[in-house]
Length: 140
View: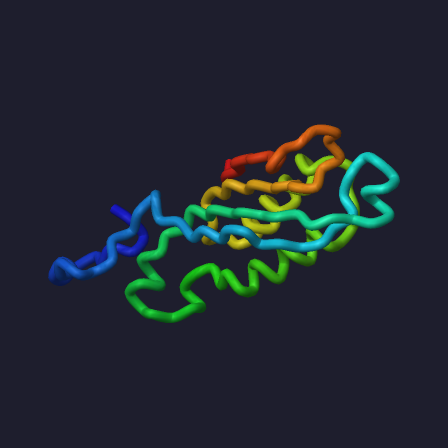
């Protein structure tokens, strides 16, 4: 029995939202300027980082009420993620991704998150399109 299933009464109609462990909110291509990196030049001039997050969230409450307070407000989440990317520098994008994941999991409704941090201007002396780290974190 899920938390959102009524204890008594008629079953929901065919269009009613059913909770799912696979409901997701996906924010893709969030771009922010940061000063992350191992090398002094990366810290001095900074560069753009691109972030993708996929949150596992039960979307049934929001689908039922049509109320933004019953879901993760992705605009507000984007503001918090940009603040992290443009904030205190770290050496590794692995560390940055972990901090972004922790911010996503700060919302109790998020059961897990996959974070991708792209560093398309990484100091690699060869032609490349992108370098990224991908991590998934969940609740214990």
